[in-house]
Length: 158
Image 1: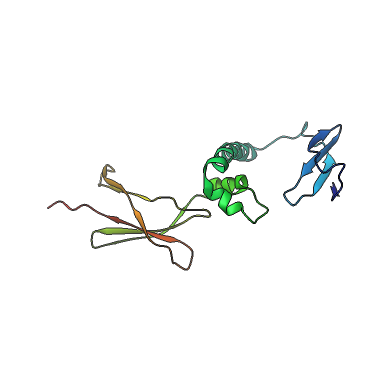
Image 2: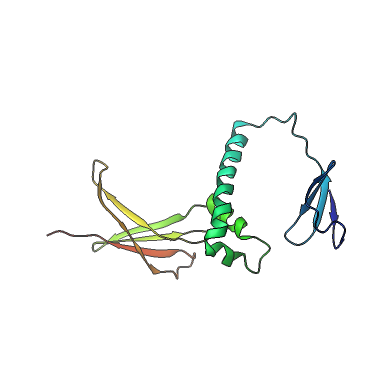
C-alpha cells in the first residue's frame, strides 16, 4: 500500500480506478492499494455474525451522527468523525457499576463511553411481574471512574 501526501493530482480521488483503490484518511493522506480479492475467502459463522452486527451499527451511526449533537461535539478537535463516535457508542453499551437500596430510594451508578442519557428502574415481584417502573434522575457525576449516580424514589402506599 502506497501513501501519498500533498499531491494535488490525487488529493481528491476516492474509490477504485482500474485495479487501484484510493482511500482518503481523516488526516488528509491518500492511500493507494490494490483491489482486494475475496473470491476464495470463506467467512466463519463468528465473522458473519460480526459483519451483521457491524451493518446494524453502521445504520445506527449514519442516522445518529446527523441527528444527535453529542457525537458532533465529541468529534470537534479530533481526527474522528461524528459517525466514528456513534459507531463506537453502538458497540459499547452503558455499564452499571453499582446498585444501592436505602430508605425507600434506589441509587444506580452507571457510565458509558459517550453519555448515559437515562436510567429506568424496574421493580419486579417474586413472579417476575412489574410492580413499578420509573425513570431515575441524575444526582451526581463526580465519581472517580467518571460514572454518574442516578436516583429513584419508590412510591410507598400506606
